[in-house]
Length: 356
Image (cartoon, rainbow, N blue to C red; front, side, top):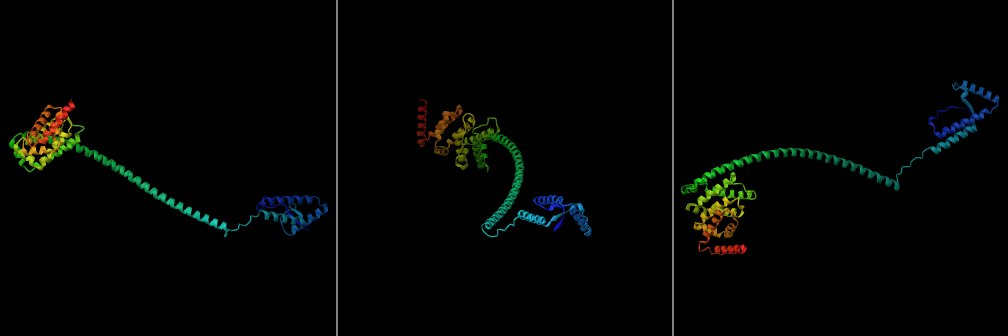
């Protein structure tokens, strides 16, 4: 039994091995057909033409060839084997066993990793938003700081101008008051007023702040600050020069506070530059020592003789040394101040020991 076989195939759907097998098969069939007898060739050709005409096929006679049944069976078997070899093996779903547990674990870890990544992204977005907000606030604060710095500079300039104005005003007014206070009648009129205690507190606070502020950089004699402070001390010295004024100062708590401030200024004010201020304070303390209550209060101040002895040694201005010596003499003139006399003798012995 022979089968007519078409020599042209559409090989796009076959694999390379099957296509190669078909091509080899066709070549073998053609070789076999070349050795057929001429009569059989013609009879077969006529049969093929007749069959083609009866079946109304459009295939040309030159495209047909005869194939034996054995060859066709061999071709089918060979193609089946190649298809069986090349066909992919079906995958078995690992639904059970250790591999399934490993797969499930990996899936869970992957799910957790994805969830962690989403959480991290959300946190990053939140932090980015906070960072942008912080940067905006920082810029606003910078602008606010610049504005406040400008305001501080303006206020500092205004404060400096007001301070200069107040210093000038105080120097002028207190200088006039210092001149007016030279009259004893005027002193009585001043101390009768209701603002005397406030004035004494003003003098005490002004001296304290003045020494603290200008201790390392003492201003000159011509400055408004120096003239203002000197005028205040001059007024107190003139008040202490009168009997009524001495009694008022030594019996008033604000006056005693002012005496303590005078002693503090003598200890802390630098030598040389503060000579005039110390001179006014020493004169005021000497005037107070004339009063009986005044000398008692000064004698009760511990270390006052040592302070005066130190001023005698260190002070450059001769007038200050004289005023210090006068105050020492006034303190030791009272028989009850024997302790001051012993203290003075100790200081004199120390001075003699140092110079020898």
